[in-house]
Amino acid sequence: MSLSLLLFIFTLAAFLGYELIKKVPSQLHTPLMSGSNAISGITVVGALLAVRADSGSWALALGLCALVFATINVVGGYLVTDRMLAMFRRKGGSK
Amino acid sequence: MSADWVNLAYIVASILFVLGIKMLGSADTARRGNRLSACGMLLAIVVTLLDSGLSYGWIAGGLILGGSIGAFAARRVQMTAMPEMVALFNGFGGLASLLVGSVEFIKLSGNGSLVSWAFEVPQSFTLSVIALAVFIGGITFTGSLLAYGKLSGVTASRAVLLPGQRYFNAGLLALLVVAALGLVVGSVLGLSVSWVWIAFGVLLTGALLLGVLAVLPIGGGDMPVVIALLNSCSGLAAAAAGFVILNNVLIVAGCLVGCSGLILTIIMCKAMNRSLANVLFSGFGSADQGAATGVEGEMKAASTEDAYYVLEAASSVVIIPGYGMAVAQAQHAVKELTDILEAKGCEVRYAIHPVAGRMPGHMNVLLAEADVPYEQLAEMDSVNPIMPTVDVAIVIGANDVVNPAALNDPASPIYGMPIIRAHEAKTVFALKRGQGAGFSGLLNELYFLEKTRMLYGDAKTTVSELVGQFKS
Image 1 (cartoon, rainbow over the protein chains, first blue to last red):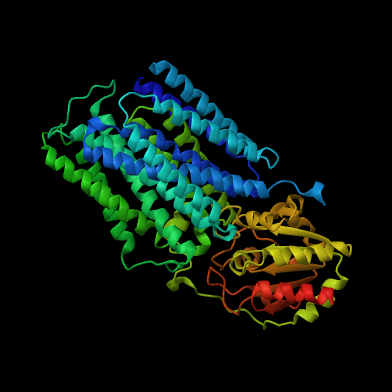
Image 2: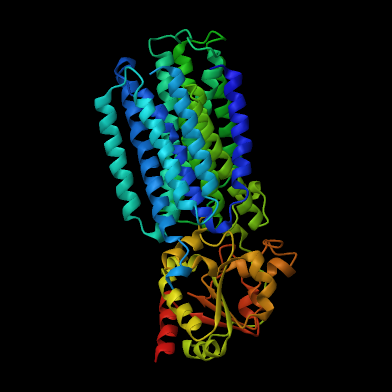
């Protein structure tokens, strides 16, 4: 994939992100933050690709560390957001 | 599976992230949105696993280890400890991006020389995005760790501004720029690989150091800004790592997060009427700043019994929670009190300032945990117009966000900050542990008003006593 294409994607994603998030009500700021935090764990993909035997033991070890930390970020981030959002249900009906 | 199919799957994953974030914007769809984005992540991971030459044994081990630590932490964490948990996860994400960048650097320079470049992009570009991933990832990692320390009470949460620290930081930043340049153009200039390695080492160490130094002068009350900004950084670090390995899903997802964090940061700054630079560099709330202006009058204490009689007669009550409610874990007691008030026909609302607490939306999470209906939570702008009609405003552990000086004292450091106009209510009760000043180091004029009564003591105990009065 050519470099200019990737930069193109980056720029569009930035504007998309801006449009998506500017309307979020302040009540939901914490789940938004922890949910997007989990998404930033996407670097797990980079970590996975780094865990290969042919790149030397140092690269393997560092890649493995990256994998563990990124997975903590992803799994923990999504679960904690889900836990929070479970409490955000509208409770009007249950009263 | 061919690269085309993998990229196609990455596009689907990106779509799921975008939809997920969009659905996080409304309370009705937020939970499904989060799950949708988790599905996107799962898809991205599964597709990546199909790449050839991966060491599956190690990968399985890493996924299981990281997954169980993450799941354990997410399950066990108290809702009051949410800010530090988010900070910690954030830091791990930054560290992972840093490590991904480092691995690519090692691969690039592994056999004693910078190996010739096989991809379609110039080698200097790859080296510069490696530098970015290491720089941003490093700052995110140690910055988040210190934020975690400050939020969880492991380290002191006040702002610490070391003598000459601004100059030192500026110098360090300059050094890092030089190191990054050395890394990028070093081999072009004919420097040996060991020099390039030294540049890399300086960049790595310096970024880690800078993360600590950048968060050190920021006090507890400004943490909402810091967490949002670090969140943004972790996304940008992931995007930089995406440019290193030329992976579009990393770029898209990282960029989305970078944007969302940045917007939250701006919202938080606006809610304090301060610039980002002021939050980051001024050492607001550190010892040398707390020049409190003299306030005339005295604070008048009241007993919970006095408060009970006033509340008994009230027909509308606004509760203004702050960090003090989180510290005292008073949210369940507060909910109980509002239930009693509502049962006798009183209208109760919660007025929530955007920067109340230690992270964006902190109060909303706590009150949601205590089963407070979403509809009772009012934003500052919707509650301020009706404040003059409110019988009783109960301030629970909030301080600067209700300080009228922000409206009427141009000399005050918080002048211009939007506040919840508690002082316009007919009566104000302020629950407070002691007579001390707020985070900004300012005395609060609100506490000296004729209509204000102070209820000293632990917020949870005080509210429970009030509940007891109603029940007896």
